[in-house]
Amino acid sequence: MVSPTPLRTPAEDALLKRFPAEKDALPGAPAIAAAREAAWAGFAAAGLPHRRVEDWKYTDLRANLRSIAPAAGPADLGRVRALAEAVPGDGARRIVVANGRVVAELSDLADLPAGVTVSPLADALAAGDGAVLDLLPEAADNAAVRLNTAFATDGVVIRVADGVVLDRPFEIAHVVAGAAAVATAVRNVVVVGAGAKATVIETVEATAAAAHQTNVVTALVVGDDAHVDHIRLQIEPVEALSLTTVSATIGARATLHTFNAALGGAVARAQVYARFAGKGATGGFRGITMLSGRRHGDTTLVVTHDAEACESRELYKAVIDDEARSVFQGRINVPAHAQKTDARMMTASLLLSEGAEANAKPELEIFADDVQCGHGATCGALDDDLLFYLLARGIPRVEAEKMLILAFLGEAIDEIENEAVHDALIHRVEAWLERRTQGA
Image (cartoon, rainbow, N blue to C red; front, side, top):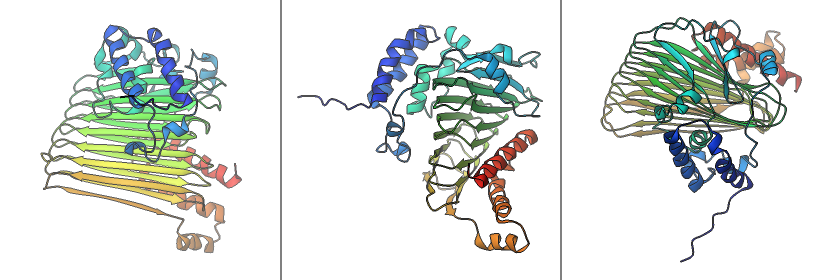
């Protein structure tokens, strides 16, 4: 019997050639190399995901990724220092990851509190610490994660000991520098011990407009009774292809709040995989997406209530203009043993033009019988009655539309507790609205 020959795209062919050529230069002891090989074998067998793969039905990566940018080399630190923006006033300890590598000289790692360690992922890989690659049980088979595991060059490993309460956030600034398109793969690991409290802010940006290809994966481990806030601002150039993944494991009575702002990239997909592993935990998963032109933004969320009496709230909002397209896929899994689960998911999209498109696919998979679960999705234009009310009071139409859009997004944005990050995000939203007004 003759085996069929798989048809591969030029991008897949390039990836198949790239891994054998680069794998020996990637950091890691032999055990890490074996993990990379296993991830690569999984990817090579399946190829890039396409619309016939259910999780990628609305974001055909095989069609969107037509060529592979070369791996990024070391960044020009002068440009990174001059152009990479910190979130002003957030008081955070900043860790800069430029072109996929931690830059110690641009990072604030002095005088860390007792019980807190921060180290480059490359060091952990070189030491053979395979655990840093094994903290993604919910997403290990995902194509973006497999590629990240195979090609990860560096990242940040933050460990917070039991009972430590951090008074300053960590800000991990992912920066791609250079005028030519390059590809980066970064893996971050944040482990917060029992009873500890931490805030982690991630920014993903570039110093110049280019068709960069970024793949950032962050694994969060939230210990029993711990509290973690994770905020991510994706503000890459409109030419970029961006894949970001958060995988979280939440302990008993712990709290995790995540927020994702997708404000850049030609094609951007933000994935969150969260699992409640201990009884009585709570989670808030929120975000906004703002799209214009012909951009494509995908938010995919999978929350698994794998323990009793856990509570989750999911709220995602999208504003879409021109011929842009937004995608929201959200699934809540409740196995039979997860009684007393309380889960609510909501997504809402605001279409600002006739050509804008929003796809929503909220799902519940429930096997327990004593639960409260619900989901909803709305899609519509600006409210004519509210717009008329504002216009009738002498407010110019442009300003009236801004007010309504800000009010629409505010329900999600106002959940951000860090005041500086909240204000910085509002500033970004207002700048987006200003560009829309000017037709930029």
